[in-house]
Image (cartoon, rainbow, N blue to C red; front, top):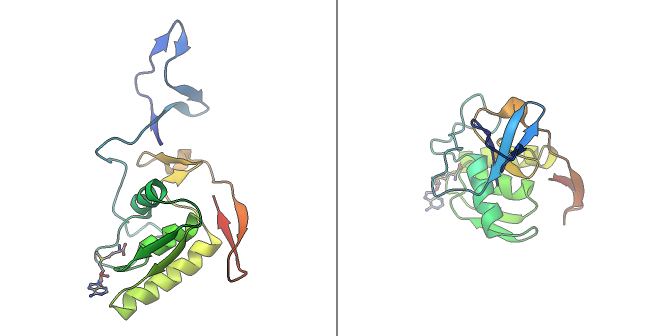
Length: 158
Ligand SMILES: C[S@@+](CC[C@H](N)C(=O)[O-])C[C@H]1O[C@@H](n2cnc3c(N)ncnc32)[C@H](O)[C@@H]1O
């Protein structure tokens, strides 16, 4: 679901219609439309950013992986680049594998995967919903539960 700020809060018999009032504003949850307007490229200032020339945003991969797999499913990306698919799969509790022809890209991917095991946050996705762009200050911190991976290493999942 996508969490949107409500600009024109409509009421029906005095009660909010399809939105809820929260501390910092009014919000509604909507299903994704055909055009996804809440995605940005990974800007240099974002923690996920690497020098990869065509790196995809983690938020985009999160939408694709959540829509097409369940926890512990296997996700494979034969053109993994800077590792976005594996990073997001790890954060979302999927098994994963990836290939790339470029060793430098794989080094960046490995570094990101290591970080993902300590910090499962996905920018723009928290509390089980996707948030609009430029809403970082309004997003709550995700809640985590521990998962024991096959290697015995603890990773954190939303
Ligand atoms: C569009 S990029 C993938 C970007 C990736 N989704 C990310 O977020 O960083 C495609 C990748 O395919 C890799 N590639 C191209 N030809 C390949 C081949 N024959 N075998 C494996 N990888 C290849 C490139 O090195 C490049 O990193």
